[in-house]
Length: 192
Image: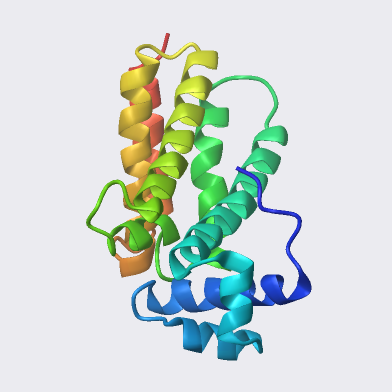
């Protein structure tokens, strides 16, 4: 997923303000009046640029995900070849990401917790993001020659999401190290 590149300066300010506020307070807790004021624009400008608060919520998730995907792709590029270490890059990359971009856990999981309808655009976007991570893991497990890459990817994505949730709660104390160790054990158990 790539972030839109045609944002006007006002739209960029709206998206930046919404991103800070949505991550810090949640989707439902932040109204368009607050976002517009924080961005220094009118509500009309916000609606002209994004159409609806719902569309802005999805834009926030997509923009954050685009930055995360770029960081992860850079980490993977720094670990050429195939193997368990490349599978585990995800856990190192997400730990670094959360150290600079986190504090409240996974933005996608947090957003999904606020919507009940699985057809809601936020739910659809979160599902797309989580499917992408799972598919990346499956691809890397397959390339590493690990047995049952589909089942292994399912388990690894749960460790990944669990570490993200743990980073927001502080339990366990070092969730990414715990998840990485468990992921290594799973990969070793699935060794070709």
